[in-house]
Length: 118
Ligand SMILES: [Zn+2]
Ligand SMILES: [Zn+2]
Ligand SMILES: [Zn+2]
Image 1 (cartoon, rainbow, N blue to C red):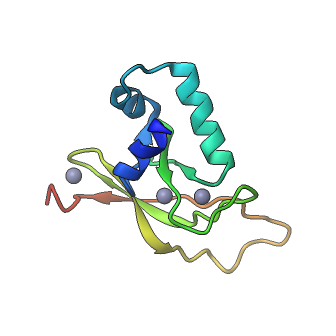
Image 2: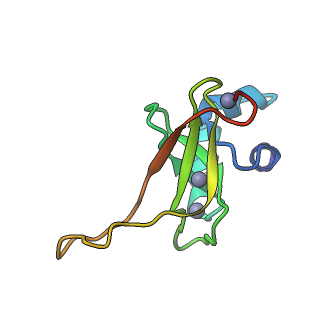
């Protein structure tokens, strides 16, 4: 529950396992990991690939439930402070996908300066 508060308190911002551990009073790496997996399965948070190689999670802003995620939105990574945020609004997928290909996930990362840094 404490972990969900952390996510809600930083709405739209992607957090890594380490960010969350730093915010907890008595962090336990395994519990943090398991809780993230549980939240993800319940459709509360989604994985964010921001090109840093570190898996981050952010609260779902789309209509996600415990069966499927619909987080087809872009992420923005600030090159200065390193903050990654979810951008509302969908991304347009290419219409000419070869026959037989199935898209499961789409990751679009925009880089630049956030409002605090520009
Ligand atoms: Zn989701
Ligand atoms: Zn910034
Ligand atoms: Zn997102």
